[in-house]
Amino acid sequence: MAQTSAPSGATTHSPAGAPAEAVTKRDFLKLTTTAFAVVGVGALAWPFISSLAPGGDVLALASTDVDLAPIAEGSAVTVMWRGKPVFVRHRTAAEIEAARAEPLSGLKDPAADDSRVQQAPWLVVVGICTHLGCVPLGQRPTDARGDFGGWFCPCHGSHYDTSGRIRRGPAPTNLEVPSYTFTSDTAIRIG
Amino acid sequence: MAIGLHDSSFKNPVVRWVDQRLPVFTMIQKEYGTFPTPRNFNYFWNFGALAMINLMIMIATGVFLAMHYTAHVDHAFESVERIMRDVHFGWLIRYAHMNGAHLFFAVVFIHIWRGMYYGSYKAPRELLWILGVIIFLLMMATAFMGYVLPWGQMSFWGATVITNLFSAIPLIGPEIVTYLWGGFSVDNPTLNRFFSLHFLLPFVITGVVFLHVAALHITGSNNPLGIEPKGPQDTLPFHPYYTAKDSVGIVVYLAVFAFLIFFMPNYLGHADNYIPANPLVTPAHIVPEWYFLPFYAILRAVPDKLGGVILMFGAIAVLFVLPWLDTSKVRSMRFRPIARIAFLLWTVNFMVLTWVGAKPAEGHYVLIAQIGTMIYFAYFLVVLPALGRLERPLPLPESIARAVLGPKAQLGGGPVPGAATAQPMEKA
Image 1 (cartoon, rainbow over the protein chains, first blue to last red):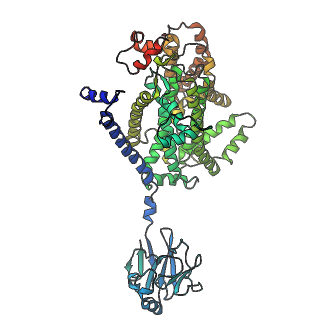
Image 2: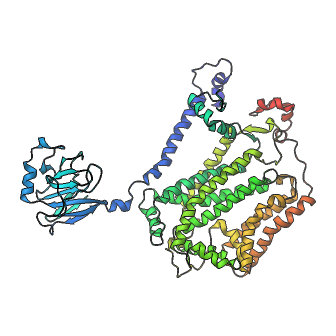
Image 3: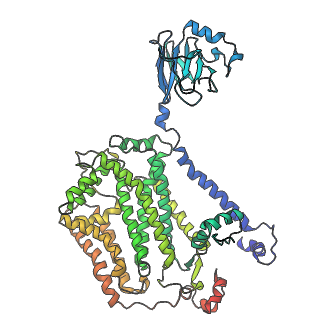
């Protein structure tokens, strides 16, 4: 191999008047070496970058069970899920009515109330303002709940309604609804 | 060329712009591109580059481990187990760090051995050698403190025994140990400061390695013949000749490394370190990692606390003055028939000390360790100083090129890479 391809290499490497565009064995070697190096660096970086992702123990804690039985109508609880607060509110008939009566056209982030709940009395949302990550007020009866009866974020003044939808203020989207399932009539599992 | 700008020879405008203001490209080209390197290196000259690669692997894996490790006596062991079980590829990163430490010492031992066999420590490379011994000392401190971090039984009792070495210092010894511990036993404050220092020292090592390489590039490399290059006919540019040769060594080294990690990751460690630290129970058979064993054997050979500690540290301290203990002008053992045999015997003796260091300190093992200790020191303190006067070395070749190429060096030409460039200088 080396013998047969030597002449072309010799031509291009001669200092006087080499054909500029000729493809040489050296070009091939450089390309394959570079390709191997790139794949190698990628393979080397993979485990290091992967180690930064949530570990097995973190993922194992990624679901939270909530017993709904003790939550009286009109009150709410806050549970921890993946290190974040989740609001579970037992809505009154009036609150449900208020959320459903609002026309979608008046909303900043239009979403029908029944698309945000699985059972009308139970609203489950991640308790983190979609503006810059503060926890809105409104869980305790004494809290300010903003102009729409839901939650009010004290950091930059975002008002959420009884469906957790953004109604006024700088937050761009509604409070996030996490994935959850009813494991019985009075219990849910978040995550 | 504006005043104050470096006169760069690079054509690429971006490279040139940077190089004129900060001539790093010129420096790399000078120190790793065209750097004149003796043409007769054998594979022992791979091990400096291997040690450099190994240091980088240790720092990379170590930084990622530190992201998951908790330096607290209540959590350290569990956090290491979490790395092994829950962190993605945590087992790989930890095993690479763990076996990397073993391999680092293996590589550095061979690197030091190379220097001793080929007389690389002799003038004008004394300071280069001394910087190397400092790196070795820093490595030992770093490895010791790293071994404490998983907070297993061996961690705890290793830390206890090694810190207690300082209690042998007369008068202030016990006081010093209390300050090392930050308490009255090895405990949480000890673990915290060891973690801090274990993170710091590799960067100190990197700094001294930089000085080591800087000093190397002043004197140039030694070579298997131990004679200085006399001109371009004796040298090759570092790139591509030795970048290629080093690459061969790196591939072999990485293959060994991969074999250790994937097939026998715990072979070089101690099973007892997978038992959480217990300050109430000392393991029956407490042994340091293999790379400390020769020095551990010397410590135990002496039936006196202070004497043992002094000899153990002396075994490394003697390396600092090796350039002056060896009085022979001839560097390479190839041309020293008696010193060569003496050094090979010393090497065997070093291995015997390693072996006996892992044995219980009783019966005839103590005697073997005592004889081994005497041989270790006799080589440095008696044999080398005396041989410089008594030994009759073999005649040295007139030049590297002459020794490597034979008569062709005189004729010039021949199918030898670099011969064309070497030719004109042959007349000089």
